[in-house]
Length: 485
Image (cartoon, rainbow, N blue to C red):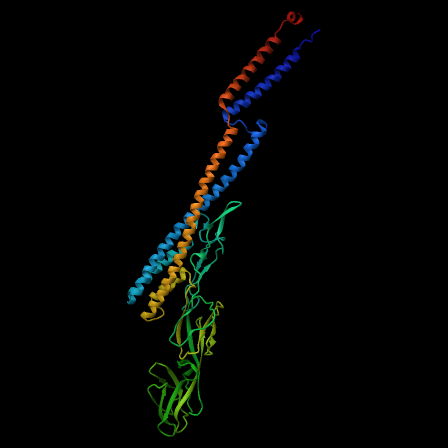
């Protein structure tokens, strides 16, 4: 006896096969419309795993390419700014050379005005910004790296403060590769390389032994404090001596020659260091005596020993200051005496053994200035602020030219490094783009829909669905006689 299919079982099978065909039709339609054959693990577990790995690699490549493009943009902007810096240094060098050749104050003053304008441009370039970052701020590129102020004391250069990072900021392209993209500006606009201290002196002071820590420039103020005289002659310091005497030195470096022409000490002549004799009388308590070299002493001649004629050794003490007189150091007339800037605590060592007069001398610390201080020094020399003779001005400008060359070479070296990095980034970008294209092609081959095959499969599923409907319709429409037969 054969089991007969009931209407319920026929309907159940019809619903099942219809759902199966509809699902296949929907899947094929999505593949055809989207162009993607594998979008979830159930589509093809093995291929889905390969596609996921490729997506991960593509994401990494896209991230690297983004970093490469960002780093390249920063470096291109930096190279462009450094090219302008190099142009300014070349222009300033030409102006400094003109200053060496010129002997006219008005011409040099005009050159100074031009240098001032270029110095302002240089400051703007040093604080150049690209996007939200300062190109020369290093690891602290979010804030302005250079701040500029005036000189701390007379004779010193305008102060420059660098508040950027002390290292270059890197762009991380991959776990194993990073490149410098934001540079430490203090290493570009300043070149380390201290040279021996230069002393421009009229007082007898020279450079001492040891290492100095002061930078830039300073005025050395050498002042007289007290003159004392060997006993026996009766001469003493006049009331104007503390502030008026210009001689300095240990006992015997300077001498008075006194001749008592009256025999009673009431009148005679006195000379300083063999200079022209000056007449005196016992009423003079503040006699000014100057020799042919311009050295001056103030004398109290009211108590000259009767009949004294001879020489008198003088001891004249004084002080040194490099901060405008804020702090002073007593002269010890030694071969190496430390003088401290009270504002900064930095020290210069001086040989004061031959100091013989008071006055203002000038100190330079070659190799310690940045580009901004160097330009400030050039402006001051061109304007004649230190009242140097033409020969000394020429020497000073020569040292400035050397410094400009050093900093210019540093700028060129940095440009070379950045250009080399840019070339490497360009090659890396090309390589990453080739890899991305390769991975995208491989992913497309795994994931893309084969349209001819999909269309044929879709038509097959549609025909099967239609066939299911047709058979079900015929089975469900049989007569009672056909069913019983």
